[in-house]
Length: 601
Image 1: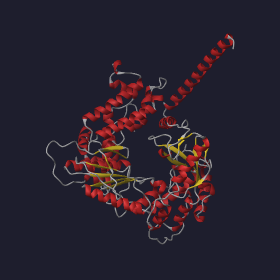
Image 2: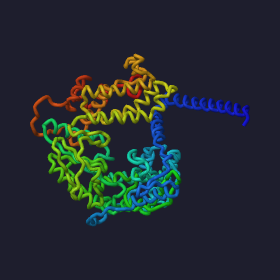
Image 3: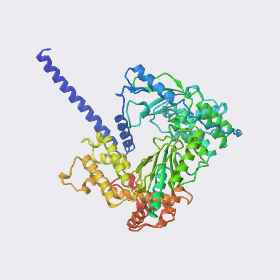
Image 4: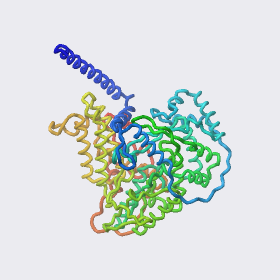
């Protein structure tokens, strides 16, 4: 290459880079302008979620380890390893005890109406990955009334024949990294099934009918209307707080079920459905939805060949959660004591007892009941926690000691043996910084306006920082910690440091963000009003109003959640009676972000 040609090449390369940069800038400017509009508000969280998924892209991880830990790099060997792993996982049952056969419940087949179809299709979310048939739910939404009529006839034909289309039996498994452990170890991935969207619509109908027949015990907080993870966290914290107040020991066991969804015996599911009085035609429909199920695994090197799935419920299915919790509710119904001493969120189980011996007995009973149903307690991940200082061990039926924890992350919020919220605050700060780093591509982009950065912070980062805070009795120290974290993030997003001598109030005005102390107070009061409007039998209301017998220890008592609520109510000028008027309570307790229309409504 001559010197003239080399110089020409460098000039063209420089011009090309400049044009690419201009195109990128124009695209980003257009995107930010769109997001900064009123219509673009709903896309803010979607953009952050998409960038988060991009940050988790593991397409460069082209190797996996086999059963012996040997690294496989050959594309054919990698595909075979993924196929072998999931085929083994989804076709192996744990030993179980035979249950008494229950006669079927006869019942007339109830046809689906077009109103039911319209309601379900409207609730279906768009923008989701399609199944093997490639037909997304957007097709049915766009077809309007004609599509609803066709679906109604189609679903009724399936119900009468109890046979789903053959194409629905196939699925694609996408391995999702759990973000912990060795990235090349297949056991550190969760397999999510992509199934036909039309089947998902039908699954929602079946789920709706099952929920109309079966009532789940109040101990279960997962996938049940009017119950949530925050309910379970709140109840656990209230019990620990009230026991601490009366100087009584509190012992908790956090049970972990090994591959519960993937290893649930289907024969147990059919028996439980009949035991709960579900009409036989519904049992036949659900059985057919699992009969002949096959799957392929999507890998970096392509999709594997098909294999059958004979065990467990489908991860990623709209129907799977309720049959699973119904089965668990049935096999342990004789052990359920009711909240607050038994808390379940799907397969996450927390048992609370007054003594070590009582806790030991509860765990063993649960372990035996689960084993009879083909479910297995994971002794390595099951942990126990005690409010006492004594060092003791709790054993399973085989004599294996469970790990004893001082802190445990329960449903995303840390619980501490001493009943304080120190670990919970530290844990949320850590999670908020992780969420911040996922969004730095936007939050630190100078082309993005400060108003839009504030909007992204309020929609994406702050909810992570405040998760579970409605249950916290925060001290001034905790509030300062959270305020410091928030101000560091806001200053960073503005491109400022403390050396610039810009007051916090000005930073908040630029980012249109209210002080986090006020948002924390509003969240506590929102939750208090929510609990107070619930009927007295509701588990959260019972936990808040429960009394523990005993005598308070000497010295000043530690701050309680109800102390924080009393202080909050005094500051905003509301009373206990005001909680019954939801609109009034919201107007008086909510703290709006500056110029944030949505918060001011």
